[in-house]
Image 1 (cartoon, rainbow, N blue to C red):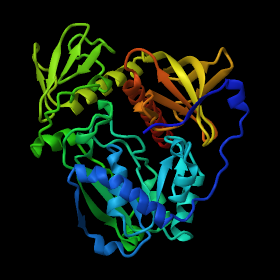
Image 2: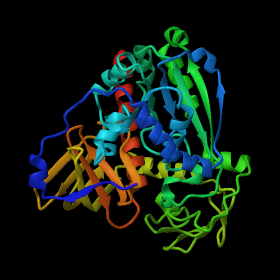
Image 3: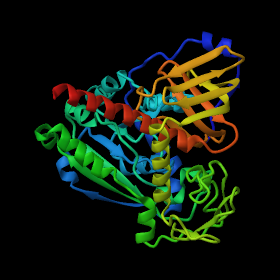
Image 4: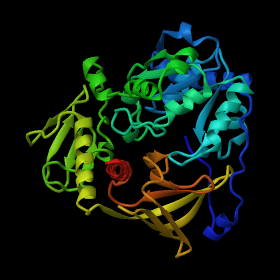
Length: 429
């Protein structure tokens, strides 16, 4: 999928009016039917099947529907399993670019990833109570990078108790293995299925404590698709299966070099020391010319998180990335405004560019994560920051830094939260 782009000076983009908030429309059954038919071909290719569990307690709805986020196949799955009911999708604002009429006609609720949006709750309430439509949300917001579940907002339990609607979970299996984000949209021959389960009836939700709800949600989003692939003997023998694997496994555990890994074909190689791994057909890593430090991709990724955490603790974490800059300010186009530099350290993000005309700062406590994506709309890897009025999409030049940036943003937020908690505990003492 591509997005409409337009080259424009920063001054002109800055003068454009920002998004005007609109309530979600009632989903058009005609447009939903057309979307379902358009996406059905994808599901036929993967032999899609699904099962239901505990759905009798969900009632007729509307429902609050959650789904894990593995790949674009998730959208086709949603339209198939929810074909008998109207539903609105919480989507990103960039989805409206060049096709606002379609996205609004489907009843979608646009918002920004990892940006506080106070109107989102009222929009969801409007969709359910006025439009009588269920609401589908991908609470992870970003696609999984390493095939494991990503952090979800801590306020979901409070939100769901406020909305007072049954909570339904759609869990996909095989979508990540078929089309992992790092693999440049190259699809593998993998069957895809899902399970639709009611997590809470309206009464169970009312009776449950917020912590109980959050614990159930945490368990529902505890996933590991590389383990799933191995345990279910899902063979992936495509010769490009390691293409782009360096996007997530960016640091060599042998020589510690960063940005020197190259995923190509079925192998991952460090160009600094030559350490080479092979990604086998069951998704495990095997050392070719070294004793493997890791055999499980998520373990390597978790180790990288530990390295970033240590950098933050000892005060050495810092990134300075030359990048191309695009701005999303309305639904007419993604505006390409020029070049600049994105810096990230313990003080947060600082973006400068467009010959000194653009300067934006974002504190580390502004969000628990950051929008980081690969081959975004087939343009390139991105790190996106900003506000509901204006989003900045930074396309870094050079080595792989997107995964590290996301990890660092999450760890900085966690560190600040822990410090705040410790401070309160000390006050009580």
